[in-house]
Length: 153
Image 1 (cartoon, one colour):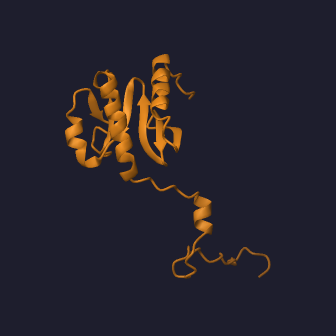
Image 2 (cartoon, rainbow, N blue to C red; image 1 turned 90 degrees about the horizontal axis):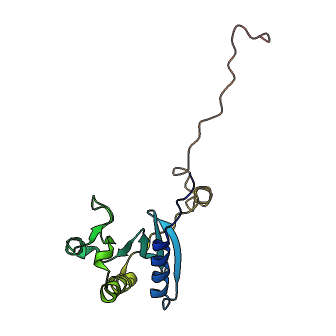
């Protein structure tokens, strides 16, 4: 399925986010959760989904932030504490916009980075524990069975 085209409004919001992060040294852009995400220092920090901002804030403030008008948790089931989608009504002023950007950037140094997954083949071949009891077991080779129908008996 081809990717959906990004609306001009969303592209403008992404560019505005780039401008806001221009002073940050280590910024990488990715697509995650269906959003255009900005990784700062290897950690998801901010993003854009349609006309909403994706912000990552301290998980301990989740309940308080979730009550803010125009803000909703990224995961409705609460599985991603501290991740929010901020609607245009909650960032409509320059001060409100800066509040969300500053909050996410302030939390970023404290946020846990998601460990990078090793490729499956590399992980299996790089087993540092040579203990044969812990190594993957394979079945012994099958023995040839003779039957009464074999001609060599």
